[in-house]
Length: 196
Image 1: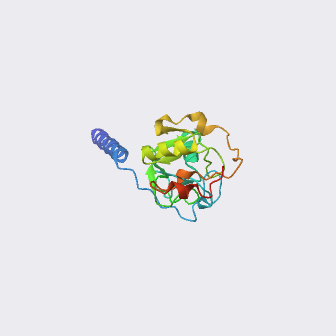
Image 2 (image 1 turned 90 degrees about the horizontal axis):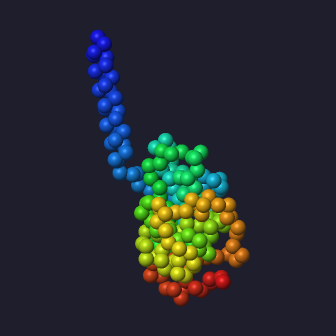
Image 3 (image 1 turned 135 degrees about the vertical axis):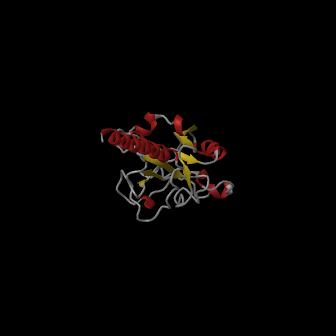
């Protein structure tokens, strides 16, 4: 009877191991469209009420995504030891396809690990803090940096101290970046109403 028990247990463990590998190799779930009811994980406010890029993280342990009022907050979640680590996918607003800085879109998500980010620019995120502005197109990120200051980095190059610093000073003037408009948007029109 004992050999049968050990054979059954070994089989169950092998099967569980295969299922874990299958889950790890499964494609990530798609992004979820942002709705008016989405609430920011850190601010507790409705995500759509904030300007600039947003973030969503899909966890194995939750049915609904974890929403963020800024792309930078999504990075914070991945870096803070107290946050969940069963991350299946991270998506951020693709600002190359955003209608505007104030209305960054509800369905134009990019895989955070594939995006190019502009950091240390004049642009301020959803809560008035420094932002990591995401773009699916590296050329759009370079144009944004040329127009708004800052530098371009990839997901794995994101400086931890930039994300976790307490730099939440609101800008002196309400800054709406020029390149928050879709690629190919008329630059002259983008400058109208732009505060300097």
